[in-house]
Length: 454
Ligand SMILES: *[C@@H]1O[C@H](CO)[C@@H](O)[C@H](O)[C@H]1NC(C)=O
Ligand SMILES: *[C@@H]1O[C@H](CO)[C@@H](O)[C@H](O)[C@H]1NC(C)=O
Ligand SMILES: *[C@@H]1O[C@H](CO)[C@@H](O)[C@H](O)[C@H]1NC(C)=O
Image (tube, rainbow, N blue to C red; front, side):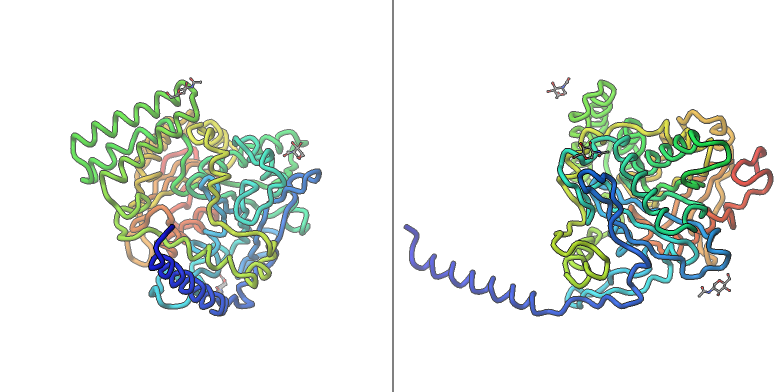
């Protein structure tokens, strides 16, 4: 038996817990102003038999400058695998964001984002794959285990979305996303182009014009092999640590080459965990940060019933910004490459690859390493193109390299969640890239198909 003093302490502890819960329950939910409500939101069925559905929020362009049927639509996909696009919506690039720069004792609130990506474009956030965020997986067997299954579900959801409004069908569409969406974005983009190719000449099921990937994982076998040099030349590890990390990287490469997918994904985790231990950084997502991104604020916001109601999400659904369960189901997909899909996309649409300067997970070095290995007729010209200094409001915003349909952007002063760190630069980048303006303006030739170097 335990001593009575211990029991007494336990009782005190329980009382304290009860009191704290009451305080938490009594504090009023954060303000979700009427203006913050999405234009449309809810569930897009992906399987009529089972009822599985992808949750979406759609925000129409705030400033409809031209005929609405010409206003681009942007789809956003979060990474993880297993993270909700509500993270981008409420932390990165949506019209209203949580006040993540608040003092810990200040209440959670939503603030308008002057650098939102729906200033002049319609913006759609999809919780992908099913089982992620508010999306519904009728059973775990239906949750995708590979990118082909991801694409089939996304295609079903996008087709359903387009049916909501006749004008959506003709609007130019761009698929965007971050991190593990470096797999999803090429997968759905490639799938759309293949489906369009089956249709009679001139008709398009989905009017896809381009894809954009921020800090993406796309060709893991090459990317996993860059962490040691990246950290070493950033001054974060010494020679001995570099050799140790390189050894672990080669294990990940070896398992990948042997198509031992589970062991390969585990080996990649060991690389990243070791790098984390060696550097002692607050986060590998941004080596300048003293603390990790406060993504739990989005979990807190979306735990309130009133907020779920405002978003058209199922009230009984518990919200998790990242699902380990879904992530686990895609474990064997982690080290599989979708580079060939990007190569295909470059022939038929525009491709933008952008990274934050401070990201040590899926950053610049890791992206440039696989980009240059692409089998695409323009790659030589792209590699020979000048890297331009890109300025926004007189400040160096980053660097842009472009040839033909391929654009590469380094964004200064940003980590992995780039639009959270540099909202204005991210907004100028996406708007100018979509509209072929500013630093992306082709100086000769057809849009995105310039046959000369400029
Ligand atoms: C749809 O759901 C049924 C029943 O769970 C399943 O057998 C089928 O594979 C699902 N189809 C897709 C495309 O997920
Ligand atoms: C909307 O766009 C027009 C034309 O680009 C511009 O003059 C106007 O200031 C914009 N309004 C807002 C609220 O952004
Ligand atoms: C994959 O690698 C693990 C770890 O070395 C090993 O135990 C397992 O047998 C391998 N699987 C296959 C199918 O080769």
